[in-house]
Image (cartoon, rainbow, N blue to C red; front, side):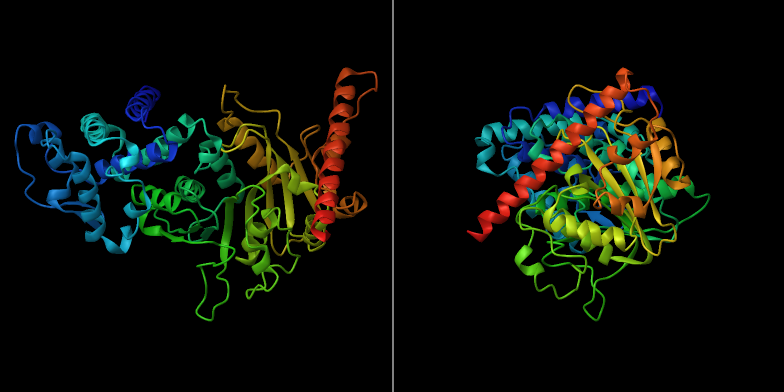
Length: 498
């Protein structure tokens, strides 16, 4: 898709989502808009929307890959019946009919999303008007040029995945984020670099953005046919439903298995003997510092996932890391997006980090800019783990200063993604950007993984230089942040003992 077509598609999506601006609840906007778009994409008939408006009949079920759309539930059947006095309610019935006709792939999907019949959206007249406006916009044949189904490529994403990204960008409530931004997903995929035939796992897959980015990476790097296994679990039913729709409208619909459930309390990917199933590659944008993550259950974990230590009740970051490490095979690798506190927090997290470093499981730590995530404006990092490592060192990369700025959201350009992934995969050292640090040096720094402690060591500047002073200021601020984190941990421990 060229730049002109890409801009047209973006403009179309903004116009479409604007229809739902009067819906107050952000999740409801997301559910209604994306479920209707999915319905439109999978209902592609042999007849054009214009033919249907003139009265042509849809004579048979419209088939989209391995599931079918009953004629009465086809989107284009509704196009020529816009004056239906109960159109909002009938949309819900149509989607339920589609789900009932395709139980193996859609069971529970539409039940997990807000429906048009929900009185919380507004009165019946408002819901009917909203439905008619949305159907009218989506009936435009231009949608078919944007979403070419099995040959679609929109910035490397399917049209539905791009719609998810736009929907997330338009949401100003950061707590409502349900996907990983396009550029960050692409970066993670380039770091783990999955090969054809490998399996990829995400224990907190959200809308499946990271999994699909890995599949897209593999497709672009493969000369011929390839196979990749995508495996994800998601605890939020609405997010899981969107992930299912996202995968089904992608080029990788037959490659994915997505389970609904809590990956820590009740992991769904298990072997026949009840043990944790293992994969070649792991990726995840874990829920940052989750409090109710299952600390009590972890004390007696039947799967033995917490061999490096049990994380504190107040933060489940290392719980997801432990789950992912336990789900890697003997030569597996994984990349996890984490809050920066994971790199230096003390207490039980510090002990877990010490155990992971001593086990030589950490290959690289990459610091990233702020505002790359939809659910928080804070900067984050990616920790790259690899099992069965030979090198006794860790690569530190400070990529926090190179990005494309935006008012609400920053992003990484192709050149930034290429530079970071090349540095990590080729183990490059670049002054003031990346450096290789022996494990012994990290031991001497109390197993602290804060990037500025190590990348700044390669700087050789005169103390009078303003850049050196700014670097010193950053290091002092980092140390202050660490002391504050340690103080919080101590206070929390005292409160628990009380």
